Length: 81
Image (cartoon, rainbow, N blue to C red):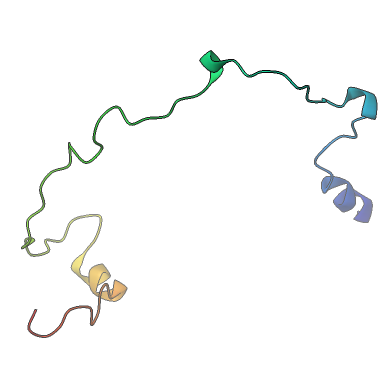
């Protein structure tokens, strides 16, 4: 049983030296170069959020009891806020 546990830890096979992939020097073609760019402003389609969010309404995904048990942002705001 101990041998089966040790054999399970080997994740790769032995590769002989003659099968090793060796890099070669050369020029890299410019058409193969990956160019990453944003096609447009990623913040453009976001909706504008209100500074005064509505009061919490319970849903089937999160109830009032569950929200109270999580204790999100307890003591985060000042009393005047």
